[in-house]
Length: 253
Image 1 (tube, rainbow, N blue to C red):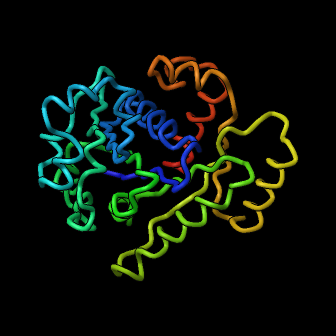
Image 2: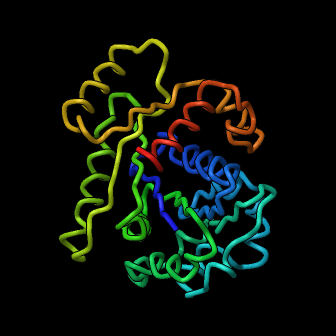
């Protein structure tokens, strides 16, 4: 099983949108796909209508990480063939992160590696120990995708995220996960601020960016209002095709 974490310590950059679309694409290609929602905002969970059920049944990311529950008990089937979700709730905020073992997620995914082909992890933008768990799970053959929106704050969350990813090898003596920056919400015609943001990325991360970019489109927002990833809401739209290209690039370079 290959683990792909999607993370940025700055919100509003298309993190969950990227995670949900990739998971849906891989499942549609016949890969047994697990989506793990580690964001207390639970937007990925909401995409599949699982929030209320998660709260009622008391299983999901909290039990997986803090209760040592296995993935098979924590995951829910979805209406999408080949796609299961370990959902999140706001209760993740109430947990004591100091009690979370750094490699808990990695061990849990190792235990179910024969059941899935790919795991997508939607990371928390604020709870660093949760994100650290995801980075460790992606170490080795996995990858961390860092979505970035081209604006005046382009470096704020990006630099913090990259620093956290690269600190893993020093802190725990494990390989640094492969990581790449993904430009999201890219307009057809850039403003001066967006052009400056693009130039900053090219200066500091010239060899660490996907060739695929995700173009801005109202179809992404329209789909999210109906809790549908754009790849199923409007599969012929430009961002849907972008995500298809990204899915290919992630797996095959």
